[in-house]
Length: 329
Ligand code: KG4
Ligand code: ZN
Figure 1 (cartoon, protein in one colour):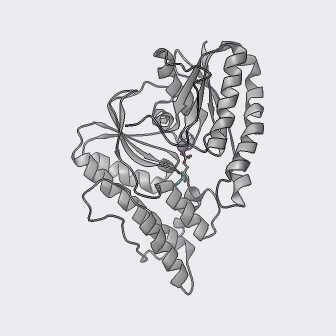
Figure 2: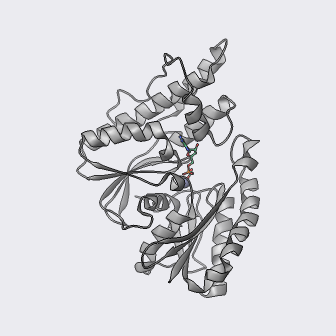
Figure 3: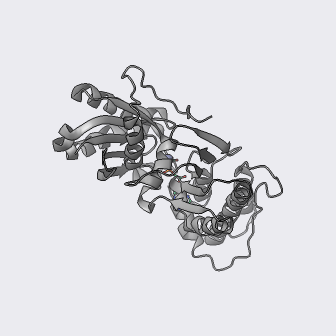
């Protein structure tokens, strides 16, 4: 068995995986989330995230000490993300590559999310992708593993970020996506409606800041607020916005496969809506397993198999981090 050891630390999840290069099987995966530590602040505190990675990553690594002799390459997320978080994973990757005399593979986090669709199986290209995370809202088209272009992005906040901010306004806790989704489920009165962003625009861009503001104003002006009704109405408007733009995109796309990735792709109402739209346009929808929608090292390891096969290695001195994505055109 020959393995890739992959490391993910781009935000507030410390994760390490071992993936079999030959059959793509996931041999080991562990993730330590920092949700509880950041909860008190209502969002990720970069310096705290960095300190927690510094203890969590070695803790996970210690569990696979006896498998290191089978490792043939070290893969690590080096962009995009929080600089101080990325550095922790990259420094560990450099130390491992140096001490074990192994090649290094740099993985773009967004590309990693795409490969969450192909864990333990072959990839499918060409592929359209909707990427919904805390930092990004993108429609991408991937011709193959290397040729990936951005078709549309958000003009302001991302989809996941909007959930996080609404959760904060309603004091629902962090991370917001799961909290808002579960709070929306208990809404009894469904008459509250927020405007769907960019409803009459024929462009594919997304925007969530107007919707977020509408909710802020509603909370400010209401005598008594009903959290579940607000969550329900917000989620409906946010998903309707995504659905409208995806319908517009699919109408003119001849790519058969449509993948939905990123932490927010775990949202069940979103999944239900997208499944219906994709069916209407006779496309095939792909989702990652729920466990691997949010940040994880398994997707980084799966992505790195392609780089390993292409001998796409990076010198230890050339491996840098970037808060922004540098690879998609
Ligand atoms: O991909 P991810 O784990 O981290 C980034 O790369 O940003 O995505 C995290 C984002 C957060 O904004 C979180 O609130 C959102 O995904 N999220 C959700 C749900 N689960 C996570 N948003 C809406 N509904 C959910 N069920
Ligand atoms: Zn992510």
